[in-house]
Length: 502
Image 1 (cartoon, rainbow, N blue to C red):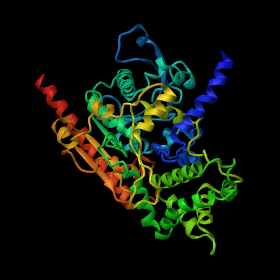
Image 2 (image 1 turned 180 degrees about the vertical axis):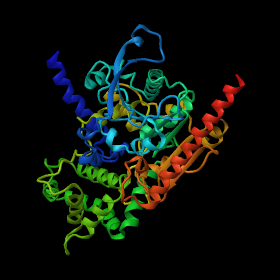
Image 3 (image 1 turned 90 degrees about the vertical axis):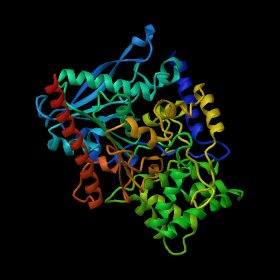
Image 4 (image 1 turned 135 degrees about the horizontal axis):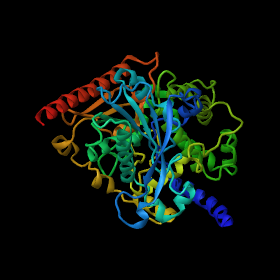
């Protein structure tokens, strides 16, 4: 059995790589979501070892399948959640429960990397709760993620609907444990977690009073948002930062192809970009650069502004440096001076997020993101659904369901539909975030509102407050807090009114 496991795993991981990198070179990796960027998670102040002792870890005996009554549906697994009661005012006060929805990664980094809860806990005298998504971190049915993803019967339970049902069960358990039946719950999430928060408010309004959905691209499904929207904003961000940087990048793709046509072209490119392994195709280099540019645009947070760092490197290269030399200088400026550069840096198949999220995108979370043909600094590479389906079927044996998210949660005619029955949702965005192209950017009703900033980036509003924060970010957070205060105030007014009636 061990022999088969070790034999299968490399093949499984290789297939994951091939899913995002097709040999024709026309489909690049879909930019990853995540409230915390890859680089942000590696910062010293974000490491899990520095998390306050005020955080207590618990495990809830979670039901495997919430939607069937087969014998195997009642199987349970331990699901991790973390509680911080330091500022909790108690169940007999007007103190809320602020809940962070873990998403496509382990919960560890969220405890210190997500600041909205801890920053506002004293203000609200709130109980803080952090929930880990099934199949990530320490919340994996049957113990092993690899085993679960190999087993078609098990991975079928790896869905967003099961995840938010998990969250409902844990929250009801916590309210009972803390004797907090009437304490209002505000759910908070960023990126995919922001989608979960918004969908949770729609599906479980009896559990959550309101939701803050930060940088949640809930419209990046079906044909709700332009497929080229993401990369159009990346291009715009670079162009606004530096016209010359933008032009250098735009010209570099043809230059890569031009060098590759030489007899030893791939060797030249490998040496020029100091790749850890010799390039076997230009696509791997292009995909690496594509991912790097996407990351710095998506997570272009103050005060460091990584996009400025990349363009500063490109524009600041020594006079006479050729196009690809300038591009490499930009890579070094952002990634640091290394002995070599791993072309799989952004697509590590052993990364928890990568393997789990690959299944989710191959089943229901199909986000059709591609490069446009016009006014883009990237080479044309439209999203090809048929190719995507074939790759997913070859990897997991299932056909992606690109219309399921809009069928189950809605999306078409969003404003028309949600203004009738939805309430208490904040959709927050920063317009420099490429994923804002799939976000809700206008108010739907008086209580389903869009709060955005022109200069903001991905999930920046729920990151920890800093003295260096620009005024526009401070104002965005203040607006969100005031809205949530209004929800809680109205809730207690309604609660008193209904109590008086009975």
